[in-house]
Image 1 (spheres, rainbow, N blue to C red):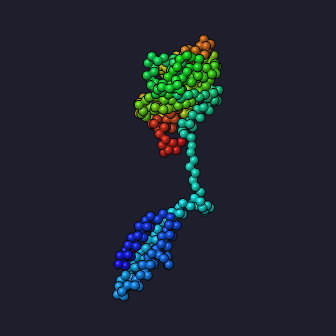
Image 2 (cartoon, protein in one colour; image 1 turned 60 degrees about the vertical axis):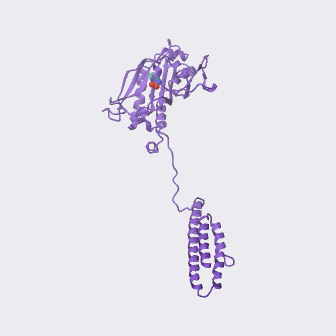
Image 3 (tube, rainbow, N blue to C red; image 1 turned 120 degrees about the vertical axis):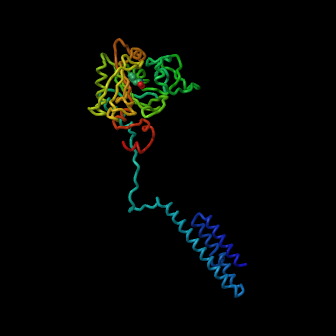
Length: 356
Ligand code: PHE
């Protein structure tokens, strides 16, 4: 029956159009059904004249409907595919009237910015900036700075040890005979002895860098953070020199009115040792979660370099003395900008980072 043939061809067209991906395929399909000489739909329409006369008007009507519907479907698909092609070519066509493309401009991480400022200040005071390894032998990280393996201070700086299961993971101490396990350095103090070995005394250097601790993280603690170590060794160096240097850096970074205090503190690599606290800028020293409600934030460990450390670095403690300190860059940035959670720095959150 002709009527069924029309319904069948309509369904065929619908199915084939669904599979059509390009304008070329669409044109082929158009020819297949509508070409004057051999189009399948054209052929069907021609068959109408062979029908009995009383059948012709009814089937003719169906034929027209099918043709009209098919043409509409073709038009729809043509327009969708056309849009797609235009979209693909959009970048290839240069339209000088369009507004320029916005270039996303990155910027330095807030810690990098502040680190560079700190470096400038120390350079101006005659310090050099030196670097050291983040994966360090136990020797430089602990033993050389007077922290033997049995010392309880090891617990203060619990860290990530590297499994000693390969050659590369065993460090041979320069001049030493033993192999030492490797640790992610817990502080930048690992460079104290390295720097003295390399440059001797007198020496004035800072060591900015990343350090690692096995910490339960909270608003004040991160497992990965940044320190700036300082070391000044010369003849007749005293705590007064340290105070002057500390004052200079805090004035330069935080401004002249920032309050600090120095109190005794224990570190095996200094004698005497102290800690420098900053008055908490987040709560105007009223007490908050960052300052543990004390109004003060621990900022810097420091002290006069222990004779054992000078010796480890090949410096004669009877001739030279010096001070060393290590402070957290994050804490400095937190106080300067009023950042209330240390975890933001490593979060990679652009809403945070974009503000600096
Ligand atoms: N290395 C100590 C720490 O990470 C800080 C410090 C450095 C203390 C130098 C004294 C001297 O806590």
